[in-house]
Image 1 (cartoon, rainbow, N blue to C red):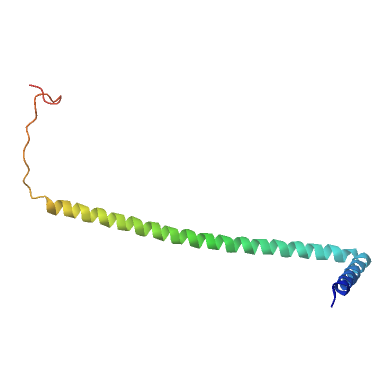
Image 2: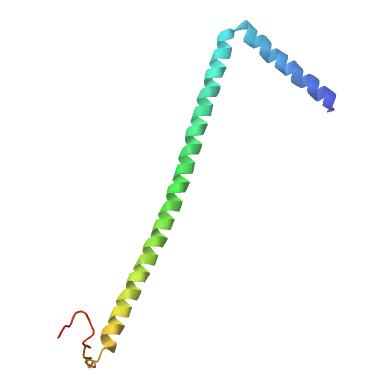
Length: 105
């Protein structure tokens, strides 16, 4: 099929469609409403899919954030335990000098 015959066929189909619309204008209104309805449904479905993907990603990020917080809390607990174990109870006592503002003589 050549480009000229394809164009002629397209023009022929277009003229047939326009002839049907001229004969019955309510068909134009019906097809327009159906097209608008299908467009609306398509937009709603794509919006729902996009929202589901965003919610899934948000959930994955929340799980990752919580696991990092748990890991940080565990490290804090380990550091506190190590500090408690490392303290042997003996500390050198320091005397304050007379120059400190909290200790006046």
